[in-house]
Amino acid sequence: MKALLWVVLAGASFLALETAAMGDDRKADNSNKPAPGVQKPQKLDKEITVRVRLGYHLFLPEQYQSDGKPWPLLIFLHGAGETGTDLELVKKHGPPKIVETRKDFPFVVVSPQAPSFGWKVEALNSLLDEILAKYNVDPDRVYLTGLSMGGYGTWLWAAANPERFAAIAPICGGGNVADASKLKDLPIWVFHGAKDSVVPLKRSQEMVDALKKAGREPKFTVYPEAEHDSWTETYNNPELYSWLLQQKRDVLIYKGTWQGGGTGHGGDLHCVARKVDGDNYSAVFSGYCGREYAFQISMKGKKEGNRIVFAGEVDLGEKDGGVYQWTGELVGNDFNGKYATAKGKKGEFTMKLENKPAKK
Image 1: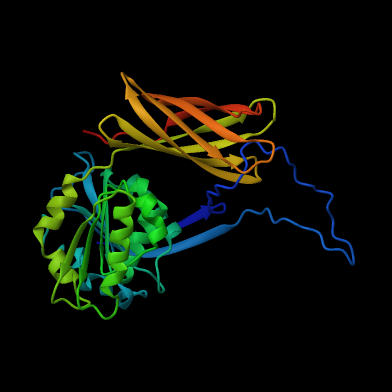
Image 2 (image 1 turned 45 degrees about the horizontal axis):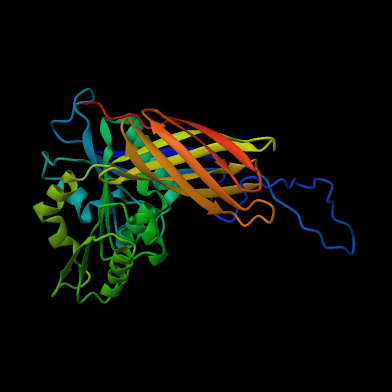
C-alpha cells in the first residue's frame, strides 16, 4: 500500500539549552535600535512554517482491524541507494521487501523515502504523528530500524526523541557518541559487518562503547565475514522480530506550565518520566522562560506507595540565582512540584498526563 504525507509544521524547533536561566529577570530591550557607526546586539524572533512532503509505504497485516487490538509499529529507514521519489526503490531491502510475500508479518510497517540524502527528524516525527493518529497502532510498541544511511538516521532520530520508541535496531550505521546519555534507557540491538569498507565497523563500535560508559549494555552482533550488506542476514533472522516484540515503552509524557513566584516569569513545561528499574525513575523537564530562554532539567524519582517522589538540582549559571532545587510528586495523571534557590527565587509547576495508554 502506498501513501503520501503532506503536513505543515508551525513554529521553530525546540532547543533545550542547559545554560538558560529559569528565573532570570532580564528583559529584552526593544529600544535598542541600531545607529550609524555603532554596533549593538539584535534579536530575531519570528515564527516560520516548514512544509513536509514525504512518500512512504504502509503495510497493514492481513489480520489488522481498525477497532481491534492495537498493533506494534515497525518503522524502516532505507539506505542512500533508495533516496529519491521512486517508491519502488524502498522495497529493495528489509521489511518493505519482506511484507511483499509475508501478509502475516506481525507489525504495521511504515517505510518512508528520503527525497534527498539524509534523514530529517522533523519530517519523521510528523510521519509518526500521522500514523499514530490514523491507524490502530500501540504507541508503547513503536520500533525503529534502518540500514546504512538509515542506520545513521536510526541513531539520529532515537537520540532526538528517545521517548517515542520501545526499541531500535541500527544496521551498519553510526551516530554521535555524545548522544549516549540520551539513549541509555532505550533497548538497542546493533548490527554491523566486520569487513564493511563503506561504513567501517568502528562507527557502530564507538556507539556501543559510549553506551556502555553511560550504563547501557546494548546487544551487538558483528558478522565476521560480512561487508557492507549486513542487513540481509539481520532482517532474515526471526530472532530480531521476537526481540523487538518483547520490548515495550515504559514512559509517561506530561505537559503543563510553570510559574515563578513574584517574578512574572512562567511558561509551558514538558516532561518525559521513565521507569529505570525496580522503584527507581527518571524525569527530564524542558520548557521556556518566557520567549527568551530555554531550559532542561533532570530529576531522579523513587516510588513510595501510590506516588513517585522526584528531586533534582541544576546550576543555570546565574550570578544572582544559585543552584535550583527541584522537587515533585507524580500521582496517577498529575505531576506537581516546586523549585527554590538559597537566594530566594522560587516557583511551582503543574502538569497533566499527555499520552494515553493503548487500548487493551
